[in-house]
Length: 390
Image (cartoon, rainbow, N blue to C red; front, side, top):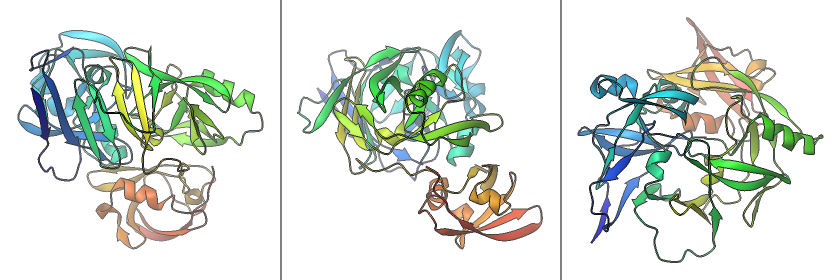
């Protein structure tokens, strides 16, 4: 028996993110199944539509989160009292998490029964991504399935076994268990061996913990390191650093032009994130501990870093300046944290996605971007000259 289905038309994506523990499918163990879901990418998160208790929700696919979760601000009252607790990695780092009995979650034609599920505050993800986030499909979900992502077609396929057809020009990488139920690949970063956890919840390419960062920088004392601000899921911005990597080796492939950032969290694992993964067609088979990568339409592109120094969030439709990098173009024209971004090149900021705004702020080195900024009742028009820092 072979189940194939496609999710019906879903309006443009907005919502998703969290964690879970044990699940079972409402299918016979020998049954083969596959279901295809539309994939929404907002520049920060990968989200898929689901039905939770009969209502449409958007869930972030995050292999860096140990367990799946639902947004506590939406679902806490429906989950009842905690039934367990686990120490797990999540979008907020390594933390103790209360677990609850999970409601029924429908993904395409697949009913997922999480034995236990976490509840987390996803308001920070909402603000940074500009998208509503209802929950997270974590590593506990991914371990039960074969997950294939086609970034070019914006689709995610869930199956219980890999396609038998050969994938031309694909590389197969061995996955090794790390952390609390997560998986990693062995790489070299500018010649330094580094084990990187596969993290579809990290919107960067390479994120290095303190130990790995120091090893890479020590091996290249003349590296052009730049101080940057990092916006955590909660709390104030923290000082971090970034460097352009000359060579990332993953299996037989050599990649040029990715950016590595230092992770402020001292307990974090080093990760390989979305900006790397989305250059490929990706298949995760955690049961067989295999990652398959095939080049996509963006394969070989150089990672483009922010050129404005602006860190933005969106709250109730208002685009706010969350932080400004010191010495950046935004700092030079006097933009401050708390300012409201009203217009971007004569277009209302409210009508643009956060991804579109961020694209405009890293379009080309030397380009001028016209911003209208409001501070209190005063409105100012600023001409921002973008500057490449990495």
